[in-house]
Length: 426
Image 1 (tube, helix red, strand yellow):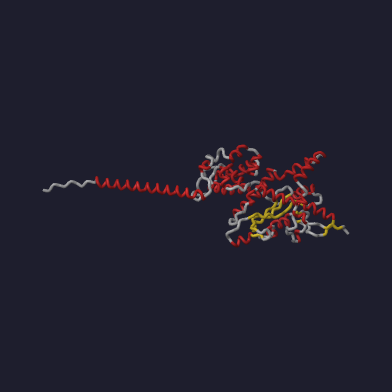
Image 2: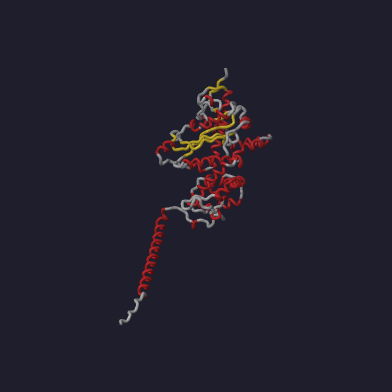
C-alpha cells in the first residue's frame, strides 16, 4: 500500500502574487509621479507665454477685506457713484427689488454641474451684493478681467460665470422696477414736459422732448453677411445703431436699439414714428437735428428741425430756430450721460451674439432711467438753477458759473455750422 504524498504548498505562489502586486503599485506610482512632473514642466513652460491670475495670486477671501468690500461696507455715496454709478440707497433698492432673491434662489450655470441642482449661495465666493457690485463695476468701466480679479479676489473663470449670471438677473430685476421703465408720455405728461421747455425757451410751445441717433462701435463679425450689415459707410466702421428719445426731464421715453449699423435712421425710428402719429397730440413735437428723417406728411409737425445751410427765413423764425437748436442739445446731453457713465459702451460690442448685445444695451438704458429718477445726477441744473437765480446777487454768481460750465450752446453745437439768412416779412 502506497503512502500518500504530501499536498503541494501554496506559499511560493502567494509570495509571487504579492510581489507582482507590489511591483504594479510601484509602477503606477511612478507613472503618476512622472505625469505630475510633466504637468509641472508644461506649466512652467507656458507661464512666460500666458498672462492670468490664479488663487494664490489673489487675496484669500473674496468676502473680506477686498477693495470692493471696502467700498461696499463704507456706504459712502461718492464712492458708490464713482465705481458703480449708483448711490447707496439705489444700490439697496435694486438688491431688495428682486436681485438678491434671484441670486440666492437660482443656480449659476456651469457646464460640469446640473442645471437642476439645488443652489448653495453660502458656498459662493460672492453674496448677492458682491454679484451686483461685480456687474456694475464691469458696466461702468472699461477695465479688463484681471483688474476685476484683483478688486474682487476672484479668478477669471469665476468672474466670467458670475458676470453672465449677474447680468441676466439684473436685467430681469430692472424690468420689474417702475423706475427702470421706458414709457411714452400720456395725457397731461405732454403739457408738463412742454411747460419745462417753455420756461427756458418761450418760443418752443409744444416741444416735449428731443431725439437723436446713437451709433456704438461693434467688433467685426465672423459672418460676412452680418459684417456687411454692420458697416456704416458714413462713419467708415462697424456700428450698432440706436435711436433714443429724451424727455425734458432727461428720461428716456423711447429706445430703438440693436439695429445693424448700415440701417438708416428712418428704418430704426419706425417705432418712434408710430408713437408720434398715434399717441401724441397734434400740438406737440420732438426736436431733432437736420439729418434726422421726417419726410412723412404726418410727421412734419411732430418733428421740428433747424433749416439747412443757406435757407431764407424771417427774423422771428430765426429766433425760434435758435431756441430749437439750444433745446435739441439736450439729446446730446442724454447721449453723453449714457456713454460717459457706462464705459463698457466705449468698447466694441460683440458682433456674433445679437442676444447678448441686446441684453447689454437694454440693461444700460434701464439703468440710465434708474440714475435719472433715483440718483438724480442729470437733474443738477433743473434742481439748482431756479434756486441760485432767486436774488440779484445769486444771479451774478450763477451767471459766472454758467459761463464757466455751460458755454454758449449754439457755438458749441455741431448744428451751428448752418447759417440762416434773415429776411423781413412782407
